[in-house]
Image 1 (cartoon, rainbow, N blue to C red):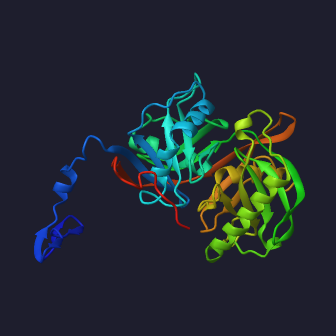
Image 2 (tube, rainbow, N blue to C red):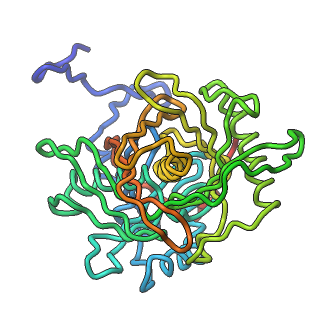
Length: 368
């Protein structure tokens, strides 16, 4: 059956399905017109990626999340919405490395929106690639009216984003993150099966242990993906066992989020490569916005980055974020920086996710 041409792209006639030996046209119109039973949960999302890392933004299908602060909303979500988190991010509706965001109303007088971030282990405190993707989506599809500055209330604190637009498109987003600081440099921890590992501990919206990849015999390439997960998870467990990780203000932020491997860039004109293993063995496809924030703090503390100078970090797949020291400050006893991180995101689709009340996998599952 020949194709019909409309404009520059060929439009094919409907595909044929086969039911009990008879050819039956599959109608896209009927699929679009179908409505799930009222008892089914229906959640609408916009799908995206920033530098390769997915972000599933939930735009409809959830009741308002109570709480006077974003941390209160996060606590409510952890206590009451964790099954839904698993159902929306895990297989069969997602995958082990899916990442999500739930926009909320702002909780500060000058805020534009609040946001909760979710992943395979729970509810994040901040997410840099998520900020870049969320702001891109919000402005491109009209969740927020056009504006030059977007002020987000996150569990880690205020994040201020500045989109760079070309017409209807958001070409990049630069955001000033929460104060980021180094807790310690050149600490050592004994990791079972590996021996002593040297690491830096720093905060960029979440706490990370930074480890030179070559020092533990790893290359930061896609073919070493599973080795990076295994070693990164082992280092995270060892550091958590060996020391207390404490945020100076918020107990809810006092935990080690992941291990970030560092090393020389593989691409031209980048300064370094980051590979972040976080949550329950997720590997960030992007350079990790909060990780680059903490890395900027480390580079500044070591005297290798001037205030305002660009620090280009590439990911395991070669995509890039650019970090800068926007300003320096003394914060809660630490010599801290306010980092600015810039990157780009793209909308990849829209989804209607359905959860039938009798689905035995309503809360999903993960296979590694």
